[in-house]
Length: 262
Image 1 (cartoon, rainbow, N blue to C red):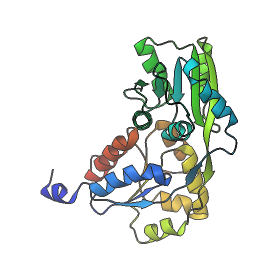
Image 2 (image 1 turned 180 degrees about the vertical axis):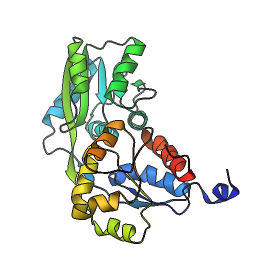
Image 3 (image 1 turned 90 degrees about the horizontal axis):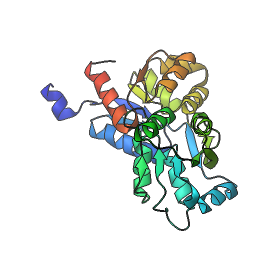
Image 4 (image 1 turned 120 degrees about the horizontal axis):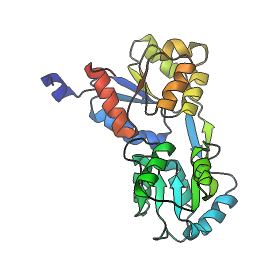
């Protein structure tokens, strides 16, 4: 590695737009800064508590009766655990779809967490349950409003009783498209991070008629193949697939900007 990269960092001077909600963007932004980059926070989706938590509270009151409680995101963990009155029952393992969610569970005192080692999504969690020989019969899935049904459908097809409950909702963030426009006009838009298909859709909506011109002027880093496919279908041409989690995104960005482009 050139001495300049060792002293300046592999992302030296690169302005990277992070489109996550603020509480999720902090960790990645700090990593970008530590690598010499300049993180630009531009949230496309905000996370809000539910207006009606009755279903969530009822499920949490029965938490000890489940064989497995699966959380599909760190947001699901934080919003649910904030309403957990008696602490996490030691007998109940948790399932997560990735390392970030697993870390949030650990921070909330959950000792047993099942996490896929590589593919960070519902398919990866199912594969990890199979590898471990785990066949839970009573499963709680905690997620945001809406969401994929793959995990619930797969477990139900195997005979499990599955209950899905929302712990938060996603709402559009009122971002200012001029932020992206100024960077693109000055040729200082070096990259963007888009962590969900919904976030990508909102980004395109916010940027309006200039969206494709601006977004195709820089690489858009995404942590999952589904997001890559979705954004390409929306007309983006410079979508770079990385590994999952903050570490995967950082490795992908550093590889791209060092010239070892995937």
